[in-house]
Length: 298
Image (cartoon, rainbow, N blue to C red; front, top):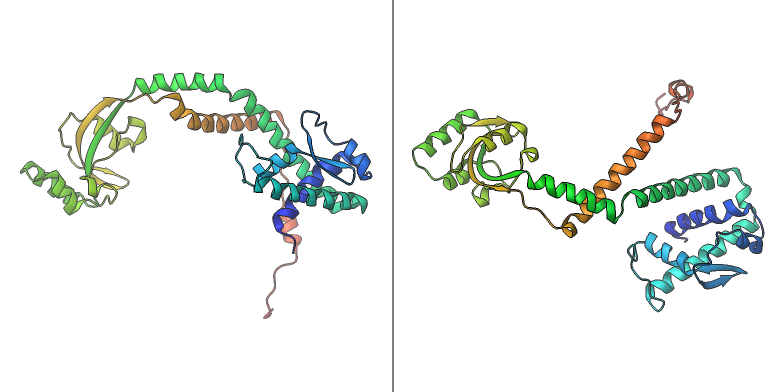
């Protein structure tokens, strides 16, 4: 039985070939494929050519290799993907021979695949223009400066669900009982119980507003009165304060790229929506026109 991923990839391949060829014979179809002079031919199928870049892109789409990785000619992956590409080409050419590209459903599916490819290419080009070494370095310098202006603190806390319990703990602390012991006995924060209630360093914008405001108001060694947040009641002790460390560019590069890509895609789509006329049709009447579901008891 034909595997589903081969069916899908065949449809995508047909989109590229048939859309540009309009159902021509194999030799005509090959002549209308995009110019691949910058690459080299790895196989010929019924007078059509398969290029190395086709194999490489197919391997990447199958996640058999990553972007930028080298596909070795003598590898198992290369031979597997080459044979899959040959199978796709055979199926695609057979589809052209049978004029499947002229069937309404195939035309619709090819148009959808073409639109998907075009939208992907548009985003790729936009991101390539906007997310590059220069812009990454610029954002890194900005973020490095901002981080250098921020303080971070480290605190430990005891979290309980009830104000009366929190008040009782505050009293015990004032009488000299160990913070660590009270964390073990009372705190509901399972993530910090083993470390004596100690939280990782954080800046003001990283925590719940009420918790952060209280924590940053404390001096080193000071213990707070109980404060309520959405998680419950906290007793907080200030441990350390420092200027936020400034990571190197390699440490931040991936997260910067992710942020810039997300921001660029959102900005582009927002701009396109503002510049375009978009009308959403009301489907409620169409829904009412559909035959209603019935049961055997109806």
